[in-house]
Image (cartoon, rainbow over all chains, first blue to last red; front, side):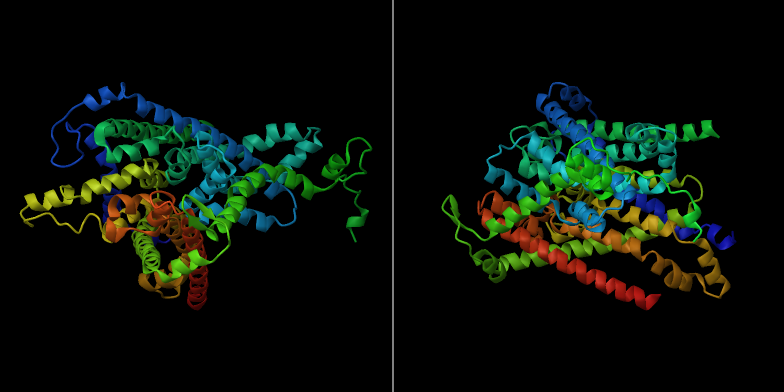
Length: 266
Length: 311
């Protein structure tokens, strides 16, 4: 390789570091204020305290909201990934008529603002007389998550050779066993990525939940309420700091396990 | 033909077995039918979640509010109102302006970062990508709120500048203004720019750059004649991924916009909430969607033209 690409670019390096700092500073305010000894989130800081973490254990509504979000996120991520696998397989492995139009249709939610979906579903459900609940929130999240699941899984299915499946069929496996023993292991990384992505999207989703939540709030809805009435807000910050820490740890763990797996193979 | 000498390949499309219903026979015979069955749950949910609600939205936008119920005689009165009354046009225009500026800023600021990782990081690329996307795993709501803490009246910037003696009183234009909304949107959506930009830059064949150098292009000419045109798909994808969702954003203008920074999403929410005029809210949603489609089309045509000119 010629040298000009390898030559370090000092200005770009400085820019990259500055970029990361600007990216991280606002996020780091969340853990910072979770240790602040004041109910108001503002400067100057009042002093170090762990009381918000202690009080978190006794804050029933915070835990309920977290549990609601986890429930919806788990169900939505599993359903959208299973449906995504079926759709991606159908799209890549068969010659079907109208394929392009179908893919465009599935990807529609990516190019329409979420608020429009929220109000459209709200109108539909209220005309049908369906009461708002976690199920309606889940339905809304499913519609946003499905395109992401399909988009994550499609390249995985496109990337592996269909002759593997044919070989398995030639060796006498039926369709289900071929899927389970050949296709499934090959697309496994895509499935994991899809589960993670759709769970994260559902867990953090606000605008659909804003229109479709009944009496049980999801965590973002609960946080939204506390922004105006700051009684339990420091506990929310403590919870958010914990979630932040856990997700950072998970991402690094996944990275470390992945690298370890590669080294073991080598 | 050589192929005729080969033994006939046995396919699944053999003679249909006598057993099973007509539907099962169709499934066995037609690949297309099997594919549609496999996709049917997805299609059913998308139809239930997209087509049906939109039809109802369209129908209700032709109704008018009458007391606590609806007057169901179809009329275009809401559309006429949304066109004639200045508040709707102003907010729509402001939404597109704010999102447009935020999108341009985000793409411009993220491009060098994606370029750096694609071309100048050789070890631990994955580490850099994770570092750049980690902040987006935290709650969007709390990230927006964090900017309120930074830009606020007693926020980081104001208290910092005051204690440094640079200003006497807090700067009031920081919070509750279009500027605050633009800054926050640009920060909150950066990952949606970095990833497509990085992917399109990483895909560029390095030998093209060498060829440009060998043919006498300096670094600047090389960038504008090879790298930038080849990364245009990433730029377009990033612009769409940010512009479209942010035009309808509700949280950021609600928390940081104030009256001058309110956007169309806030107005739509008001129609479904405090104002309680659902037909008007439905009308505004449809108008917003049509405008986005029109703008996206124009943007695509323009970039295609420009791309054609460069290459």
